[in-house]
Length: 218
Image (cartoon, rainbow, N blue to C red; front, top):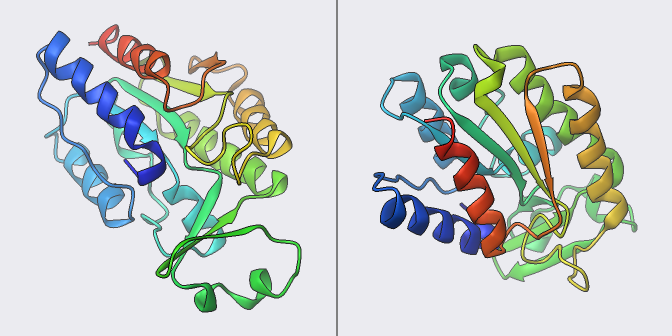
């Protein structure tokens, strides 16, 4: 979970706990959280995964400060447990205070930077970067899945974060479509199902969808 995907995670957790009676553990997508989740999956301590906030991939690829390392998204696929993946907060690379943003970004003059607060600066991913993120995610799932039928990817076409919805500071249809198309294209010919939803990631309907897909594989 991440601040900009919290409503989705909270709703999914509520449904899993109250309607289906499952015990739920929430990991924060801060780098350390992603690593902890991957480790617990590898240790066989988790039975299924809703991997909704994959922003750590952006930090790994583009030098942000919340990378979970190069093996993110491998464990659940490798173990063959039910796994539903989405692209929450892939509209951003995370940095510290504005002055810490690498010069190649801050001095280019064409990067959209959003100061969340005095300690956090977010950089909007470009269409090219989004394409790379999509290919990275698809590649991990395709290459590591023990059973591809146990992996599903859900694309929230109404926005991948709270600030990427229409009218939001990170709204960028071209960047989002580059992300979605890379995933579609790279998973073509596999048994990984790609589900496209019109809602934004934080809508109740989206949370209900991803939970339904996960529970259907249990």
